[in-house]
Amino acid sequence: MRYREAQQDPWAVGWTIRAMVLIAFLAAFTVPMGIVPIIPGVRGEAGPVEPPEGPIRISLSTPVPTPTEPPVAPIPTATPSTPLIGIVAGHYGHDSGAVCPDGLQEVEITVDVARRVVALLHQKGWEADLLEEFDMRLHGYQAAALVSIHADSCNVPGKTGFKVAGAEASYAHHSTDALVECLSYHYGQRTGLRFDADTITYDMTRYHTFYEIDRSTPAVIIEAGFMLEDRELLTKRSDVVARGITEGIICFVEGNW
Ligand SMILES: [Zn+2]
Image 1 (cartoon, rainbow, N blue to C red):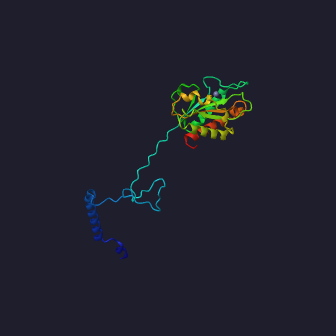
Image 2: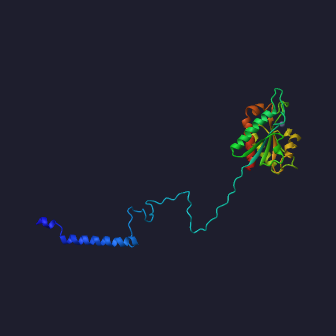
Image 3: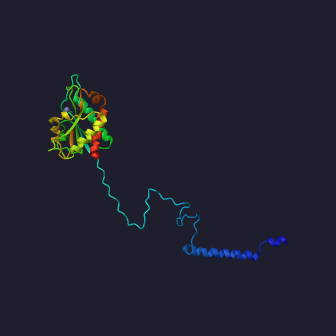
C-alpha cells in the first residue's frame, strides 16, 4: 500500500493539466494587449535606473547647483592677445656699426643678441619681428614695444656700462619712460653692468627709428655695453645680454615696473 499512496491521484493530475491550459489560454490574449507585463529576464535591463550602492560620489569638476540661488551668468573672459615686439638689430642690413682695431664689428654683436631676444620671446609664446636698421616694415610699425639693440665703440678705454633711451619727451609715447625703467632695471640686474647716464647722446634720443614707427609704439634704443671693456659679456655671454633685454621687455608689457 505504501507504493500506491506515493502515486499521483489521477483526478489531481487532470485538474493540474486543466489549470495550466487555462493559464496559457489567458496569457495568449492578455500579454499582447499589455494587460500583463512581460517581466524582464535581467534585473534592471529595461527597468528604471536604480541609484548605485554605496556612498554618493560628487565629482569636484562638476559644480553642484544650489537651487536656492538664482542662476549666475558666466564671467566673460577677454581672449588674451599675443603681444608683438619689434627687435631691431642695430646696423643690420645697412652698415657694420662701430669697428674695433681687431676687426670686431658692432653689427655682429647686435644681430647675435637680437636673434636670441626674438627666440626667447617666441619661447614665451609672443610674436617678435627681427628688423633691420632701415627695415621697410618700420614705417608706421605698430607693436607693444620696439627695442633697437646697439653697442658702444671700442675707442673709449676704461669705459663700461650700458644705457637706454627713448625719443625726446615731446615726441615719445607716454609709456616710453616705463619701458626705459623696465629695461634699465632688468638689464642691469641680469648683466651686472651699471647704467651709464653720462654718455646718452642726441644720437640716441633722436634715433631715426623713433620717427619712422607709429607713434603709438613705445620704443627705446639700448647701448648694451662697450665693445672694449664689456667685450667678454657682449661676445661670450650674449645669452645673458639677450635675457636681460627680454626680461625688461616682459616687465614693461606685463606691467610689472
Ligand atoms: Zn650702433
